[in-house]
Length: 268
Image 1 (cartoon, rainbow, N blue to C red):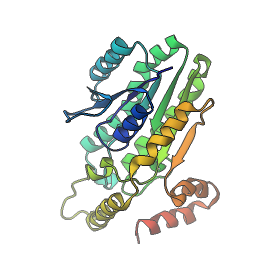
Image 2: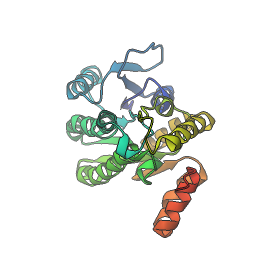
Image 3: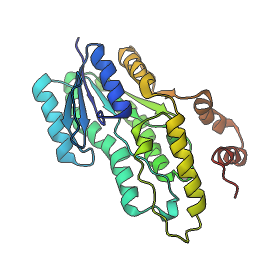
Image 4: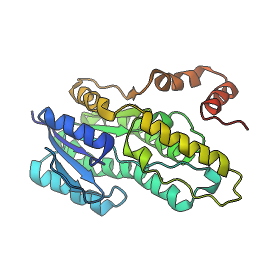
């Protein structure tokens, strides 16, 4: 059957890569974007702001009107920031949570009635390795992804009776626009965090530019869709990124904290 796929944040990065790959495999793909983008790709791009329930509802209604069903929902839209929790503005915190967590929640709640009616469906939520590890000076981003992890674990169990499967994809660092378009905290000149945040912001930019291409995500998502019994979690990234959450489980907390701080060049 020609599956109908809805993917958020599909104008750039992971979303666009996944949308193009799935379209090349014969899926009918609807992507969404918050802003106007030049679009000549082989999938339909719809306007949607995941922070706005009315915008979400309009896009979902459009897909249903055109295709009659939604077989796969991929919650991919996300934003990031570098900054200390103490001095990150409330507006940045709310934007990150509204996009990364409440956006996922809105899409799930809006699409699930249709999937229950179909008695089948697949929801793939994009989390992060940062949703399994609290990353220093990315605490708000990590918090949003920790929330997605808990939501997805619970939802997976709630909707199994309706033949709906729910999965998490947990990427490490990739060269995508979520890293390039960060909303970094604006710190006052006398901030005790200013020097280290400047260094970490530069490090984050270098990591994005040196990170691998997001092209691996397309085949991974395709394999999840085609799996008869998809797993709850799929990690994708470098061997160390994928291993770090397992190390966290067995290493004493202080040692693991020192390991993370060493990686981020923190010397408090």
